[in-house]
Image (cartoon, rainbow, N blue to C red):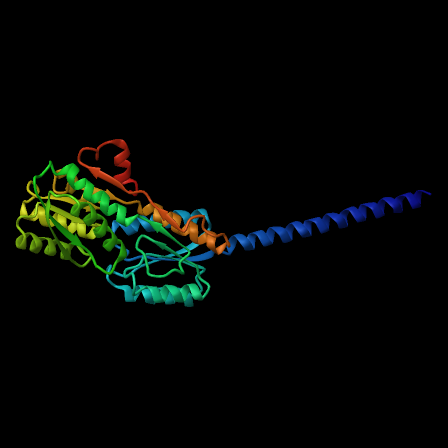
Length: 333
């Protein structure tokens, strides 16, 4: 009787141990699958118009923050200058060959970048367009400044900071006319200007998107049209060049300058009166939302909105030292 009881308990104990091993096996398998899942990162390639400006450094900073949050392996790329659409196209095709899972893209050229973007989408790679648009309907979503409205904001700022001139003679220093955001900003700016009877003339010069060429173009524009009393320009590099030209010529008291974007030099120009207003975009948000959207697309989630407008703010000498505007000027430091 005692032997039968002993055998019974031995059998129960053996079954319990076997069951524990089975449970541990399932647990270990689940752990390893989870470990494998966590170590397998999606690859996202972020290709911008360039890599050197504070604007795109802020884009990359936002993108890296999202990549950390969503466990994404992020590659950040761009040509040396903002006219080189051919290098961008090469980078897109290299990303396709390297097996990237998604691309976040800011176009140098509205038309010339379209074919390479289409190739990526047709290869099964979703493309999120940020900052500067590209001429294709195949992108999954667009995130960035409403450039037309930003141009209108710049125009309204002219009348707010110029002190009520009886006649306005406008000079526009714009970058590559094939870049969509520059074109749309000028259109929005002109719409407001051309509707006001006080505006007597508008002259535009197109320059390379570099401080040096923008400075040269501004000086030539002012030499040819000495009546100009307002200058408008629409990105970081041209803002630096226009500000430098006005500073070199000593024209800050006779010419109002409306510029774009925020960096240490532009803020100094604003503080010293060389620039009268900055239209400040939100590149950090563009980068963050771009990578976040890319991750969700890879996961199979469709974007809630196809067109996302990021924040744009007018900063002047009157408000630049207020805490909320200080955060806008220096939020990417």
